[in-house]
Image (cartoon, rainbow over all chains, first blue to last red; front, side):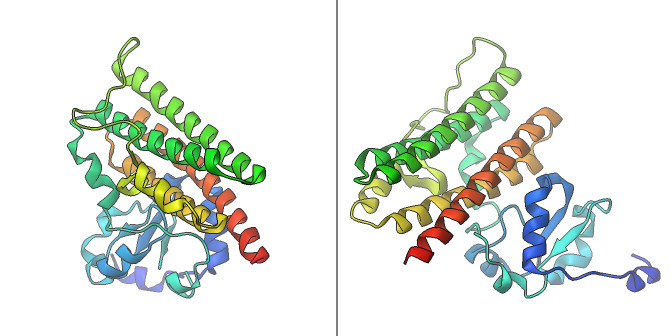
Length: 73
Length: 181
């Protein structure tokens, strides 16, 4: 991650927009990341979401495909 | 996603990241992975069939019979995948000690689920079915991510796409049932 990455725009989608996107796309067409804690993930998560707690995100970015859109919650 | 999980109005899967996959850890390879998936689909099918048989309302019974057919299609998809990997004439046999039809999605014994469902209103049974479908979708996406070869990955993603359609139907049905009160 370089300094210019901090200036890349990040859009915010509503839950309805996310739902519509997930319905339309194949599961391998995006990265869906739950950045909460494991206990919160266990209690309920979007189907197929990866669990990468926010504190670990910087070290685990390699697990995500940079060529695909990434949705986090 | 604005509002995070609290804003999400759709169904969610439950359990740790690999909870649904732990059951599959006994699989020694792709063939057994498929066989174990088939076992769960058969369990779901047996559950829906049991509900359909016991339903007093014909409309409810028809709904669950349609779910039986959907699970049959999933089993066929898995059987095709098994043939592709293991070859024609091979048996889709679960690993030793695993009984087909005894357990459904989430590791719930079919008999226990049917006993629980007796006396429940339709909405409660559909809620359980929807939770099962959400967990199945979760599992197939993760399995697609974890398998190494491209054909298997494609099949699991196709199964995930089918589960997503099921889930959409379940969500619509739940909305209708909740509107009715």
